[in-house]
Image (spheres, rainbow, N blue to C red):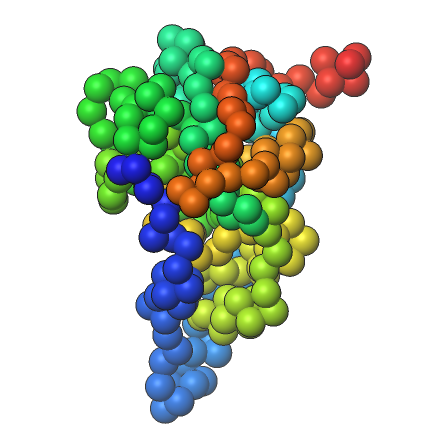
Length: 252
């Protein structure tokens, strides 16, 4: 589990994600066009909460780090297992004085292991829980996701997608997919926010940073060793859970 996300850095993974959604044969081109139109119409009715920001009453996480404060909205309706686990661990003060043990520039910052080695961590229940993927949630820059030792082996470690732009080649590949996985709203989101579409439908997204992305980027640019470990400690100080209020935000 030491290099939980190491394999994700390979280009092979990126191409695997998109090659799994290949086009149909030309003989059914008209049928494809009709299906695509129906899927696009359906997609426009979907809710993509990462693109709208927190709403009144949403559950948010206040992530205090040695470099500043990060605030993220959580999505229990789309990733109930991951969100409840995260809330339970936060309420137990599990996420306290931990290291960001893995930082990969223009990819992710990762923490949530009390041993600081990348090999530890436990879920709130003591048992790993399943992956939760949902077409409403994607790996835009600022997305919170569950790191794991393998499919359905989620525990306590999490990452935040950071500092990335999506190449025109990847945008074109997403546009070519006709199964509804990447509707226009999502592709536009990747164009605007950047992110890691290669992680979509493989790892659980359960939240989105809406304040403190500059802190994420600051951490993402720290000096690291050959194992992607910061050469100077960067700490996760605490995580607390609040309810979002636009009125309180204005008061600040």
